Image (tube, rainbow, N blue to C red):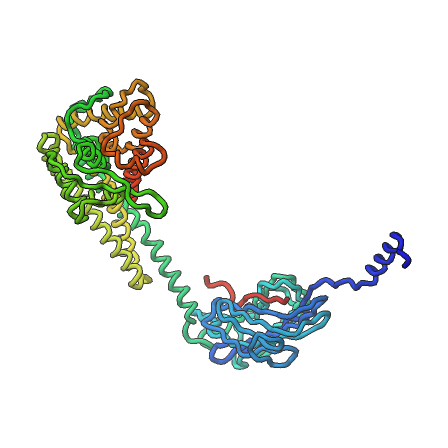
Length: 569
């Protein structure tokens, strides 16, 4: 068999390429877009659109038209046609679909076609397109849609209306027509080429009340919104002024109240030097209260564990992670009142001698435990009862102010939202209440914040608190490795205080790398089940406790009706 040379093969390929038909570019245009509008005696419109599309290349299988409901009270699609033949609804070739919405989308389906001209017709009824005003009944209709990706070679707009009516002005169109004709009951505009995405609006003016006696619903809503907006704009200065007044007046009261809590300068506030020795035999739970920490219950937990009252053990795996439990042990250890309340919160509510470590924060957050701590602080002379009562009144007044402000604000909101504030007095009253509520509410919230920051400690309590803050600072220095000569035995001794100060994890990690640190007996139960050593067990359990604490604390008159778009594909 004779083989073809490379040159012969290339020539054959070029010959086939030259003979292969080249696909024509797929594009289209409208030879003519005709809109016929029939104005009915009752003001409704009967609109018929006929578009003659010239398809170049292809194939094309559908044409669509979006009819906007803008500034109408409703549009009803009546019929669609293709080349003068009425179609039935459906999604097959030779049928049309209607998707109701805003806009309404009508789609003509037909067999694939190329290089041809076809006429697509659509008829629909429009309600409420004629605007009613004091001096005219106005029709502004989007006769050519504002969005179309094709060029229209010629536009034809015909408007028919009852011949007995006399137009009040010369009909207008939003482009210069090449031809126009005006006769009794009929207006015709003929335009030249219309570029893509250029729409045309036809405008006619009839005697007032000749077609509609009342404004259509969309117009009445627009006018109401405009009136309401105007009334609100008039009322805003009043609301702003009242809001500013209520805020300033309340802030003056808050400042006066806050100043009444000021102590004599320097009384009990002298900073204490850092010391690695605890200032006294005070339990970690009370120390946390004196230093304004929120994790005093963790200090209490670890202190009880150190004293053999409870034990921390490993529980069953959950979701692939280690869990830890707190177990009550038989003990004759003397418990302070707040420690008794702590044990009661943990085990009486749980109704067993074992509770998950992750539940500690929620169980300890009860009134009895906190009240017992406050009672012991008072008994030690560290709390100023008169100052505490005064602060409670401050909190109560601020809270009541916030509630009253909320009531004012909601009253204004309901007044404006429910009543017809097209009446000026309603708008003024509603906005005034909103302003008063906002101003008073903002200042009352500030009052709550200020009251919450006021210390109720006595002068002696401040001195004790300052000393413990110095101790806390020394522990922070150790966790930051600023004190390399740390004794290994400090780990277990001060771990409850570290937990109460909210830095238990940092404390445990600091001692992980120090040789000779004794392992607390109450952690022995964890060591056998962990592969990463004794201190790994401690850090894992301490971190779980810290994590439970974190979760607990985190816890116009212008514009045209109609419009839409049109296209093919």
